[in-house]
Image (cartoon, rainbow, N blue to C red; front, side):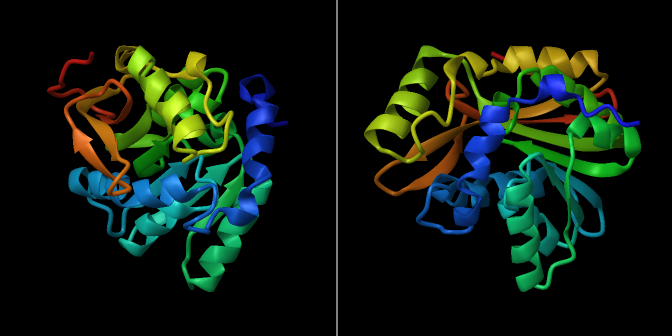
Length: 244
């Protein structure tokens, strides 16, 4: 019998995203920031990894915004999430777009047990800060990735600046996100994420900050990782950069 890793699930987080699943593909709805962010995060992945005909896993895929971009780039893509409502929306949207993306409602840890050493590229974007034990997700990606494969994460740094920009600013002042989307205590410092990855046998290759421009309503990369950041690792040892 499969152990569903119930201790690494926050039911409130699943319910929160399930409740707005039917608005996932509305570019002016509650997922508007993800629609605005997606071109940047996709281009970052595309810059650092070959995607065409590669086996790709998108962890915490939600309704499939990034997942579809990876599929359209020629990847053989699977998306997994614990919100069945979001997965059903993702399946419906992929069907309407005639895309071959595969979607499953399953825990990452269980999926890793079933598909070890199976993927060339793994993405896990805006997800780690929503689970009780993000280190277990990092461990699962190390189990899933092929030797030399590439793993991409994006999340929020735990700093005073991120509290004011990502919670006070984004949720209460600019109202870019529904209130309660993020919890400051769940934010992850790059040094913590790199430590977990190193323990799992992964090697840091690059880290970039993500900056939001409220007037232009666009995102760009920056050397400042004090708020949002995107980071990638490989499954084999190699040259790495330091963290802050």
